[in-house]
Image 1 (cartoon, rainbow, N blue to C red):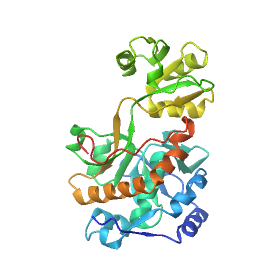
Image 2: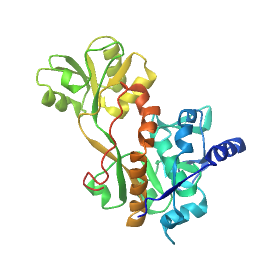
Image 3: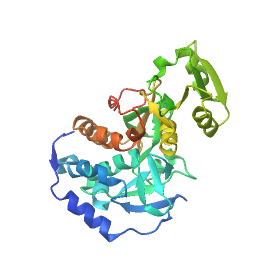
Image 4: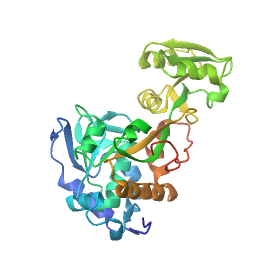
Length: 317
């Protein structure tokens, strides 16, 4: 697959034009889910404007005849299965349904730019149908939905990536300067959610830690802010959402377990998989993946930017 790309000199004007045209209200889709019409920009996109301006666009030769890529290009819209209620990943502004922001959505818009030349996406929230069904029946072209790559799922659909590795991470009170990750939790009181992987993972990593559990995530966050524990261990993306809504906590370090997220693609479409993986390699190399992370998930962390995962590094990818 060719890695040649051209840089767009007109994308800023295109973004402004699409934004000025306005967007229709949410409507129904054949899948029974609500669909957000093509969206080019939201209130949080200003920080990423320079990334959009320099975003790669695939050579015409990469859009193989009769391919999925060519069909998306002709349609002019990338259809994306993504959540509308996932802070920092894919969250819709209730007061402005056309404004969807987050790591997954910004990457989806960049993939749309790569294929179409414009950040035109249509969002279909996975609801009554499973993500695999949405891909298999052609309702969507791609899934950006914290979609963990597994070999079982990969028997039904294709996965590009991984494009992000989540897993258990550590949150601490925002004024804490002593804890920077799992390695600092020896001898500490560590809050975990009951019946979550952290219940066993923390003792495995830090046998001298005192583990205390609470039934729900809000209860865990409350316990942390009230000083009933030194740290809270939970999935990275959930902690990031907690930190966004609660200035009293912050995420420190990177995940110490691995849960690789992939981009879901239609089954038996190796050409599209190669094409999307080629795009991922480009945005890893040019720094735009890191810029999107820093502007979204990275805003609630300790300032460290993870290395992007290696393409094809987990079974099923």
